[in-house]
Image (cartoon, rainbow, N blue to C red; front, top):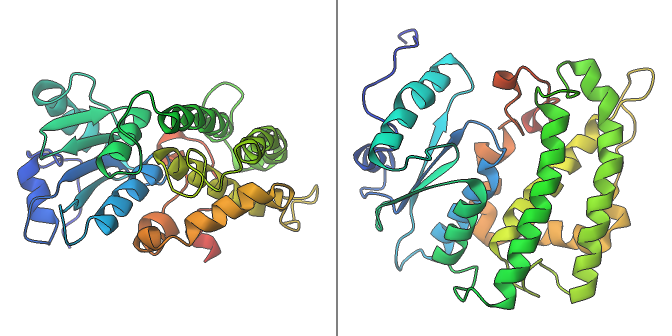
Length: 291
């Protein structure tokens, strides 16, 4: 019960020896990821890691450690004043959050899309041939979904014309949801055009599907937060009812046994959707408030 201070321990959280100590499984993990204690860009990476751990159990182990930096002064100091400094010096001059360390291949990887592409190939959901149709489809959807994510960033983070108060959030949320339907229309058309259940392969998951699920799932939550002019909650919109293929995709991902442990975890059920605390913005009540 000692009170926490802004003093940080000397050992970076991402160092492999620390990773080995914290798995509780008696072995060094194959991967270590690092991100804030929120879903954000960490959600898709966590899903990929859970998928790899499930599908490789009993064979080439793909255990992982999830390094989480608190959304407070201590977490900021741990990353910016210690871990990032050490990572720049020892592992990757581009050090950033999220990051992924492959301990087996001694690689430290940053940038979200690069991490997803790397993990997709390592856990076997993406093809390795750079010229394959799956790889091309996967890259296109990954970037399309990132456009949707960027529109969320403009809603919830402290940029010009973005949300900084609860009243601003409720005021701008309906407009954001309306604009998001344009992306939903494109994604629905893509699935219709290819006659696919998933985005890069007809009946099998690719790395782009994890972030696609997360962004659709976030918008499912945001729809519950719409308020009327009197400030009272209104009946939840059902954007997916207009897009049957997207609705099926979302349901299929949610029911995958490979992701059962993730969907039962605090990282999915309790974490805030985005880093509103440090950004001095407002993101709405977190998912845990609805459970």
